[in-house]
Each structure stands twice: as C-alpha cells, then as structure tokens.
Amino acid sequence: MSTLSGMLTRISDTLWRKPNLLILLLILPPALWLGIIYLGSLFALLAQSFFSIDEFSGVIKYELTLKTYGELFRPSNFDIIVRTVVMAIAVTIGAAIIGFPVAYFAARYARGKWKALFYLGVMMPLWSSYLVKVYSWKLILAKEGILNWMFETLRLGWLLDAYLSIPIIGGNSLSVSATGTFLVFLYVWLPFMILPIQASLERVPHTMLEASGDLGARPYQTFRHVLLPLALPGVIAGSIFTFSLTLGDYIIPQIVGSSRRFIGQAVYAYQGTAGNIPLAAAFAVVPIILMALYLWIAKRQGAFDAL
Amino acid sequence: MHSDRAPLGLKVAAGLGLAFMHLPILLIFVYAFTTEDKSYQWPPPGFTLKWFAVTWERTDVWEAMGLSLKVASISTVIALILGTLCAAAVSRTKFFGREAISLLVILPIALPGIITGISLRSAFNLADIPFSFWTIVLGHATFCVVVVYNNAVARFRRVSGSLVEASMDLGANSFQTFRYVILPNISTALLAGGMLAFALSFDEVIVTTFTAGQQQTLPIWMLEELVRPRQRPVTNVVAMIVVIVTFLPILGAYYLTRGTDTVAGQGK
Image (cartoon, rainbow over all chains, first blue to last red; front, side, top):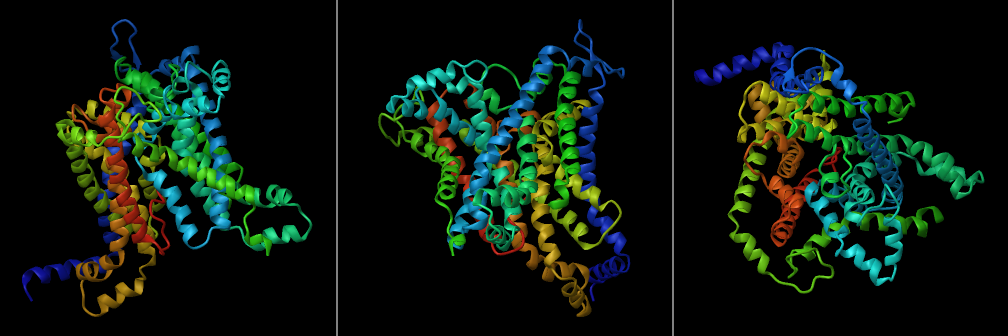
C-alpha cells in the first residue's frame, strides 16, 4: 500500500471513529464564509445605524445615538415608509387574487402534460431575468406602447385618461404612475405567490371537497369554508415573499413610477450621493423589523403550524 | 363525475393568469426585430435583423457578457463546494446549532437584496477592501449557496445510510465512498443546483450594484440602459439573448430533478 493511500485510510478511519470531527470539518467552511462575510457585514450595517451624521460637515460621528432613527419619523421620511408598506400590501393582495386560480387549477385539475406545463409556466417567469421582466413592462406601459395602443384601438382612450387623472394612483402616463409601479411589482413577484399556494392546495384531499358538496354546500360555500382555510397557510407563505420583496426593491420604482420614493430608493440615495450611511442603514433596518413583525404575527396566527 | 372537470370560470382565470405571466416576455422577442429605434412604438413599423449585427459589433456588450459569465462560473463553483458541505453536515446528523446553520444559509436570500448589498458595501468600506471582480464574486457566492444547499439536502436525505455502510464494509475509505457511492447519487441534484446558482448569479443586479466598482456585469449594463436609454434596439436584442441564456439552465435543472422529491428552484 502506498503511503498516500495509507494516509487517506488513516484519516478516513479517524473520521469514522469521530463523527463529530467530520461534522465540524464539513460545516466549518460554509459557517465561516456565511458567518464572517454575511453576518459580519450585516452587523457592521446595523452598528452604523446607531451613529449619526454631522449636519454641517457631513462627517459621520462615531458615537452611539438614536438620533438617526428619530429622523425616520420626519414627515418626508415617514411618508416613504408608509407608501412602501401600502404598496407591499396592495401587491400582496393582487398577487393572491391572480395567483390563486392558477395554483388551484394546477394543483387540482392539471394532470400529466398539463401539470408539467403549469409547473414550467410558473417556474420560467420566476427564474427568468428580473431586469428583462421590468424592461418588458417599460415597453408595455410606454406612451407609444402596446397598452395605450390597445386602449386607442378599442376607442377607450378617454377611460385611460380619466383613470390617470385620479391623484396618487394616476400620473402623466402609466409608466410614470403608481399604478405602473404596482403592475410591475405584481408581475415580477406573482410566481412567488403561486408556488406556495399550489403546494398547500396539493395537500388538500379531494374527498374533503366532495364531502362538503355531499353535505349540501354550494361550490362557493365549499370554497369559503373548506378550501380557503386549508389554503391559507400557503397564501401567507406566499405573502411573506411578495411583502418582503416589495419592501426591499429599489429598481422597479426607479424605472417605472412617479418621483415619489420607496424605502429601497431612499437607502440607495442616502448611501450613494448623499453619503449619509447612518440614515441609509437605519432605513435598511425598517424592512427587517417589518418582516420580523410580519413573521411574528403569521406565527401567532398559526400559519406555520399548518405548513 | 363532475368534480374532475374544472369549472369554466376557473379555467379562464387560470389561463389569463398564465398569459399575464408570459405575454410580456414574448413581447421582447417582437421588439428585438423592430425597425423603430427612437421609441417603443407599437405596432412595430417594420421588422429587421439589422440590430443583431449591430449588437454583435458592440464591445461593451461582449465585455459585460464575459464578466457576467466569469462571475457566475466562479460563484457557482464556490456555492457548489460550500452548499454541498453544508448539506452533507445538516442531513447527516442532528447537531448543536443545526437549525441556526440552516437559517444562516437561507438568510442572504430571505432578506431583501438591498440589505445584503448595502451591508457588504459598508463592510468593504470599513475594511478598506477596494471594489473588484472578487468583491462581486464574494456577494454572489453568498446568496448562491442556498440554491445548491436546497437541492443537495433533499437528495442527501434520500441516499440511504446503509449504502455508505455497505461501501465501508467492503473496504472503501471515506474518500472512496464519497467518490464512488455518494457523488454518483447526488450528482444530478448538484448539477441542477449549480445550474440554478449560475442563472441566479448571471441575472443578479441589486447586490451587484453595491459590490461592483467600475466593472459592468450584463445586468448592470442593462440597468444603465433602462435608466438612461441610449441605444434601445441593442437593449432589445440583449434582453432577448438574456431570456434565452437563462431559460436553458432552468429547463436543464427541471429535467434533471424531475420525478425526485425535490423541486428545482424551490429555494428562490
């Protein structure tokens, strides 16, 4: 036996006799990588949110203070937070409404080839390029684009104009309105809502729905009192994605939307040209806290027990 | 039995939902051939193949594409190593801190990308690390680990422990067992995880804007064009190429993991 293979055998024997050593060796590289690079950076960021910036010199003062967090509650900043949360809620509700029939059909009725088609039909948009998806909506919503053309061709241009004249959700054109931002968010995050709903619906036995019908429930009643409660954990799991992703995004509202900013854009602006890293850090903490709160409520509602 | 037929309303709603998810992407394929180069005019006034030739000549597109491919390849290799190690440890035994480790792996993708991005950026600033190719890779590998991990951990659980014991009883050492017994069993899951990690990295923009210096990956190039459109037709063509490039690994991953417990891309 050559010395090399002898050595390998000895190492191998040691690892077999001491499984804990093996586990340690296996886990050490990923734990170090994620622990140092990721958690380290995360804590560095959190720490910076407790510093503040000198208003006159623009230099960061390295003293612990809550002043930066106080600035979040200034009306202009607080508006950004409220706007983002409202958008996240709207996107979540919209995604649940559009996603549910797709998930339900895929879970309950699609078989064989259709099942594969539905699966790929959700996976493809989920994994295809984020920027390309956003770009496609820039094409759709442009003034000379397909959506306006459709409205004009159907002679419904006046309807679109009337809609766009509504304050807050309207604007000069769809591509610079809050409605446009909403549509793009909805489009980009929709697959994240469908997959968990479908997973939860796959587990609902046929027989339960039939029993409900046999006991005299109308289809709507079966849906409302049997199917929906059973699918709710899936909806909540999906809403965690849509909510969190909307809270943190800064590219979509920058490309399609009005000049009114969202949390992500505020973070980006404060850390970039403004050079106010503490305030950017404090803004970045907002989605973390909101998500923690959201998960905590979801847990208290028992959403995870059913998952 | 009426319960096996979908009600018409449901069929229509599901079909519309799917159409909503796919039509916008298909639209890009039409725009890549339009003769209009100043606006996003619909319907296109005419069709041409000219922009493919123009894009072919653009060195900035090629450079960005090259950088993206390089970053994605190296990040995928790192993610494959770290993700497999982690999955092997977590699926093998229950040990102290196991839950914490699985949470740690998922965290970079569970938290919004901007938080990962700005954390890394401020850490690089604090540590005086200049932005380079490697800072991009560092960020990408961190969030790619989870994809490999998710695919690998599901497969590891299905590789029965008795296989490993049988191999050892027959005289193989741990390394031989890994090479000849475990690896063939998990290889398709690793390949699928690797493909998805590659697709994820190739497409990443949010973290990259924070960890890249002057370098332009393809998504960064694309973002610049989105914010300040300079040459729309070239952007249209690049968008179409990106769609095709990312679809191939996804289809591949789907066929590799089809019929197994795990679902490709579960973790995104």
